[in-house]
Structures are given as C-alpha cells and as structure tokens.
Amino acid sequence: MPSLNSFNTSIFPTWCPGCGDFGIWGALKQALESLKINPDQAAFFFGVGCSGNISSFIRGYGFHSLHGRSIANAAGAKLANYKLPVIVIAGDGDMLGEGLSHFIHAARANHDITIILHNNGVFGLTTGQSSPTAEIGFKSKPMPWETTDEPINPCALAIMQQAGFVSRGFAGDQEGLSNLINQAINHSGFSLVDVLQPCVTFNPDKSYIWYRQRIKSVESVTSDVLTGIKNSLWIDERISTGIIYQNSRPAFHSNYPQLVKDNLLDTTGKKRDISKLLNGFK
Ligand SMILES: Cc1ncc(C[n+]2csc(CCOP(=O)(O)OP(=O)(O)O)c2C)c(N)n1
Ligand code: SF4
Image 1 (cartoon, rainbow, N blue to C red):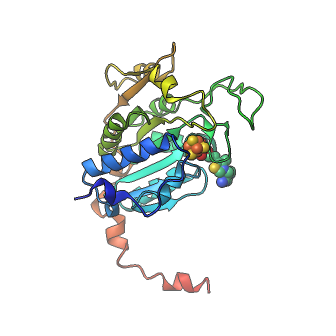
Image 2 (image 1 turned 90 degrees about the vertical axis):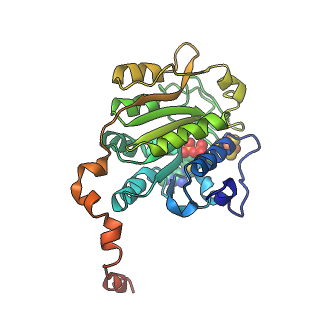
Image 3 (image 1 turned 45 degrees about the horizontal axis):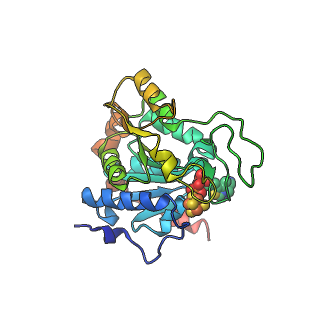
C-alpha cells in the first residue's frame, strides 16, 4: 500500500517559496495514494519548465521529454501498454506553445492519458515571458510591452475536440485538486486537469487571493459541447472549477482490438532480440 512518502525522492523541491507547484505536487501524491497506485505502477511524462522539474521530486517511472513533446511520448507509452496509468505534467508554455498540436490531436483521438497542466500564465523557468494563457495587458520584466494576443483557454479547446474528461482545479485547494486528479486518472480517455497555478515570482498579480475571489464550482458536469465551452470561459470575473465536461467516448486504444487483445508490451517485450540493432551503433 503506497503512502504519501512513497512518492518522495531524496530531493526537496527547488520551487520558489509559495509557488503553486507545491500544491499540485501534494495533490498528485494524495491522488495516487488514494488510488492505491504504487510508484512502479504508473508512468509520468514531464515537459520542460518549473512544472517539469517535478521529475526530480516525484518517485516513479518517468520520462523528461523535450520541450512540448510530453504528450507525444505519453501517447506512445499508452499504446505500448494500455494497462499503465499514464500521467503528463507540463506548463502552459510547454503544452500550449510548442506542444499545442500534440494537445489538440491527443484530445481529438481521446488517448487515455491524464494531463496535469500547470497553468500560470508565464514561462516560469525562463523568468516570466508571457505564455499562451496570459491575459491581454500582461506585462513583466522580460515583456515590458503589454501582451495583445487573445489567451488560449485549454478547457474550451479540449471540449471542442470532445476530449473525454475536462476539468479545472486550483493549486491553492489541494484537497479539491487531488479529488479531480483521482477522477481524471480513473477516466478512460483523454483527461485534462487545467490547474490555476500561482507563479508568485513572475506573475504576482494572479495571486492566491486573486483566484479565490473568482473561482466558483461549476454547477454540474455536462456532456454538451456548447454548454461545456460556455462554462469553461472566464466571464464576468468568474472562473469555473470542477469537472466541466465529460463524455463516454471510447479511448483511442480500445478502438483497436489488436492493441487490447495482446498488450504490445506483454507480447513483444519478451521476444524481441535487439542486439543486431544495437550493434549497428558500435
Ligand atoms: C525546444 C526548446 N525551446 C525553448 C526552451 C526554453 N524553455 C525552457 S522552459 C521554457 C518555458 C517554460 O514555461 P512553462 O511551460 O509555462 O512552464 P513553467 O516554467 O511556467 O512551469 C522554455 C521556453 C527549451 N528548453 N527547449
Ligand atoms: S518561477 Fe514561478 S512557477 Fe517557477 S518556481 Fe518560481 S513561483 Fe513557481
């Protein structure tokens, strides 16, 4: 039986004091513990950023991807072993910038992977440039001119593609967030947890108080695309949290009997001799 400590490594997080990533880290460990998933029973795929640095702070099988490529690697792992819970952890810059096409295609294919999106409106690790979710008017030290681009709303985008499970959580509500992550992992199909994550250093205006004044639990989950998109929008100073949209579309792998009948890892893992291939690199 896993405990919260089962997922700790010998390295304590290097995030700035007060960073929302701490809450997400705690919520993830809590969700895994409640699901009784041991560190060796899931695979984590990390983007590049302060968020992706969690790779050093969470014990488990993991792959630190190239910038923007965590979803592509995660989808591949799921196809090779559909029995494995696959969790992607990345920032809004990584996933909605360079990685945006992977996000959209994985959502429309409904790959059975869980996305934990650290949404802080900035490229944190590279000192606060505006990310694709920054609101119009955002300014920071390395971005002295106001952002004029419309922000991307990852929940609306995922709903538009009829992803299976679309939710939004808050890093300042560890209990609620761990509950969302738990349900996202349990969902068979693409599951998004868009986490409102204060970056206290480079986006101090979007503080814990700022979010607390605006977040409101969504009244009910819907499977209607238009209602889901409407509920996902940041309107009138109100940001909905909770499970915003859910459907029962089959997950990508379950459309392919050959993947499900013989799990690729079980059938090919033991038999293949790759020495010839490796010798080619000598
Ligand atoms: C291919 C490539 N392009 C750019 C970078 C530089 N880079 C590193 S982290 C990062 C952005 C991180 O922002 P985000 O994904 O929002 O994560 P956060 O640090 O805010 O958690 C960038 C642009 C890189 N490492 N690799
Ligand atoms: S720069 Fe921002 S996102 Fe990165 S660790 Fe510091 S507070 Fe967190």
